[in-house]
Structure formats: structure tokens, C-alpha cells
Amino acid sequence: MKKITLLIAALTIGILSYAQSNKEEVDFMQAAIGMQKKEAVAQFVHPTEAQKDAFWGLYDQYEAARKINGKKRIELLEQYAKQYSSMTDEQADKFMKELITLQTSTDKLIVTYYKKVKKATSPIVAMQFYEIENYLLAVVRAQILDEIPFVGEKK
Image (tube, rainbow, N blue to C red; front, side, top):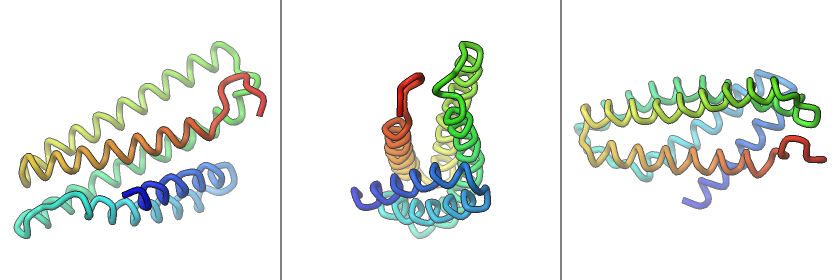
């Protein structure tokens, strides 16, 4: 698990590095993370043979929606990078409102798909999905926070 977590964290940092230079590279990096992430999910989510098609179909839908939120997160981080050393109160408030909305949306997305997976498979499979998604999301969020400076902090 730690290898996959470190790989996803490294790829996340790669996305942050490339985000300012080329949107196509961001798409490529998101696809690479998605493949690695799918492997991690496959290690920890165990639908029965009869449940596999339903689970993976829902997972692919979830990933498509998650990637939209991921792109929004990258856009917010780009905005933050441009403004952090001279951020005004108005910019800070706008940024925080957008960040809170995005984080809430991401958390609700996981809950929505937990319910869909539970209905299509079982509560255990849904719980496994919920646990791994929240774990990976926490790792990514922690890595991002570790890499960005605080507002007004000299880099």
C-alpha cells in the first residue's frame, strides 16, 4: 500500500509542477494516476465475480467525475501560486469559498458513489471503496498541503 501511496503522491506533485505549463500534460498525468489508482483500488476492493462488472462500471463513472474535480483543484492551486505572496482579503475569501465548495463536492461524490456501489454490489464492497478512496484522497490532500507555502510565507 505504501508503494502505491507514494507513487500517487509523486504523480500528484508532478501534476502540480506541470499544471502551470501545459494542460495536455495535466491530462496525461491524470490518466497515469488513474491507472495506478485503479490498481490500488483493485487490491483493496473485492467484489465477487457477479459484482465485478457493476462495480468497475460505477468506478469508471466515479473516476470521470473525480477527474473533473481534480482539474478544478489544479486550477485553484495555479491561482493560489500566482497570488499567495500578495493575496488580498478579497482574493483569500474567494479562494477559500471555491476550495471549500470543491472539497465538499469531492466528499459528496465519494458518498454518492458509496451508495451506488452498495446498491449494485454489497455494503462490504461499498465500504472497501469508501475506505480506499478516502485514504488516497487524504494522502493527496496532505501532500498538496506539504508542498504549498502558507499565505504570505516566503518561499
